[in-house]
Image (cartoon, rainbow, N blue to C red):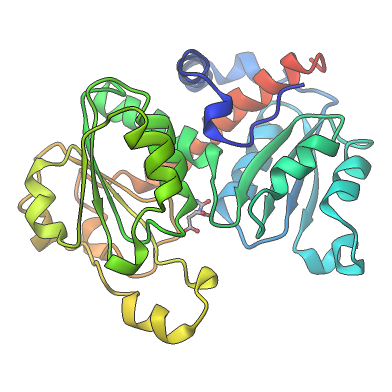
Length: 307
Ligand code: NCD
């Protein structure tokens, strides 16, 4: 049975299919209003979330399904010491599909190995976040009309930023891509991500600390938050948190059709004055996240024989 733990669990044909399905959902929402009737999605979120959990829940409701929800480790049996494996076994007795976020890398994989229903990784520690990437890909497709031939700048906390790891994993499979990795020296993209994606596929990339100088060449600028909760000490966070702040002034050097993206929540990395710029796409990502999660839930339930 298929789960979605890492973005590479989906091949590029499947991702194209999810994008096509999302576009159909956007064009004809009424066709999908009862597709998941009497089906249950369980959302198990052991880490803070606004967008991801609510977008999964909104997605399931818009498909006519129901939602069972645990938010916060303090309110579930995890607080009594229950393992992720046992929790997954138990919840799969009640739900048809599970979306799980957990602070430990690999937790969603453990859940999938012990669940009798599909598990969707909604973020596992600093590792990956495949459904954010699906939202990002749908956004790039809708804004640019393609997923290939793009120069993508990713900026901020590339070490702990799981959305970036999944995004690079997905976009490095497209043709004619180039990546510019902008981060402080301490927050560079981990070598395992570089080795498994960019190097393995011989994708051109370079690393820099200077956002301003690379701005003119970018088609996409993907900003990220410095991931405070993953730092070992607060002083390092305080020193690095304002490394990059995108302002209208800085955007003057960017292409007129560059997309500014951010998985949100933003802290300081994008000034609110940028929100009115037509290049700001981060609130579009939020909405696209709901549509593509609808498409994903349908796909996984069908493949599991539950629809
Ligand atoms: C991201 C996450 O949880 O990794 N948020 C999200 O799901 N949209 C980004 C972040 O927390 O910085």
